[in-house]
Every structure is written in structure tokens, then in C-alpha cells.
Amino acid sequence: MPGFDTNQWAVLLLVLVLGWLLGLMSRSGASKWRRAYRAEQADHAALRAEHDTRLAAANARIAELERAAPVAGGLGAGIGGGLGNGRTGQCDDLSLIRGVGLSGAARLNDHGVHDYRDISRMSAADEAALESRMGVQPGHIARERWREQADMLAAGRHDDHRHLFS
Image (cartoon, rainbow, N blue to C red; front, top):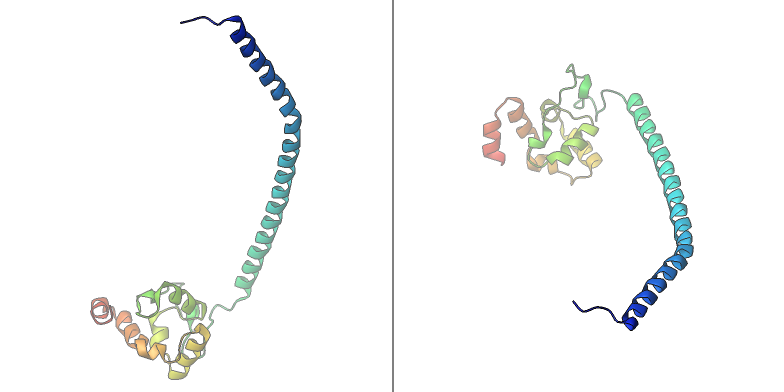
């Protein structure tokens, strides 16, 4: 390995000194970035605190509405016995009915329809009211034969239902 001559040592020393000087100079600019970073952290903390406050208020409002909501909601005397129909919170899986699906089952529960009997007891007026509240096309429940499907599922004839409606 060849050794360094005097010029190479001088260039190496000069590069080291320049690097050291640039490092010292950049430290003065770093405080500007440090201040900006701290200000951004403070803004983020304030936004997070506001978010947490709004979330807590929303959850409190939801709890208040749940306490104030009637247990047996519904569309009328024909259906919608909901949880007030003698059962202890058990709901049928309404998503098994073709044309309902998971989101439809949740919406049915929101409208007081919780089991197959609620659907099978619906009158034509109840169907129309439910369709309008759920925002589906008029006649959807009759076209999809929800009452017939609900009767089959309530009777435990899941295989027959699957064969006819799947």
C-alpha cells in the first residue's frame, strides 16, 4: 500500500476541517428545525385532545340515546315486537334471508325487526312502511319473498331454504 505524500495529507486535513466547520454551522440551523418540530408536536397534541373530547361527547350522546330509546321499537302492532316480545335479547340471523344481507339485517334491527316471526307477521302496509324507512324499492320484500323465507327459517327448515333461495 503506497503512502500519502504531503499534498494528499494537506487535502485530507483540509476536508476534515471543512467538515467540522460545516457541522458546527449546521447546528445553528438545526435549532430552527427543532423549534418547528416542537411546534408541530404541540399542534398535534392540541388536535388529538380536541378529537378525544369530541369522541367522548359523541359516546356520551350515544349512551344517552340508547338509555332513552324504547326497548320495543317497531313499525306498528303487526310487527316490531323487538326485544319486548318475551325473549331475552336473542335475535335471529336475518341476513340468511335472500335480499337482506348483513347491512340489511342491521337496518332491520334498527327498525325493530329482530326475528323471523316479525317478518312473517308483516302485513302489506307494514311491508310498505318498512320499505320506505329502509329506502328500498317498493315491492322489494314481496319480490324477494321475505315472509315465505322467514316462515321456513323459523320452522328450522334451513336446508329447504338454502335449496330454494340460494
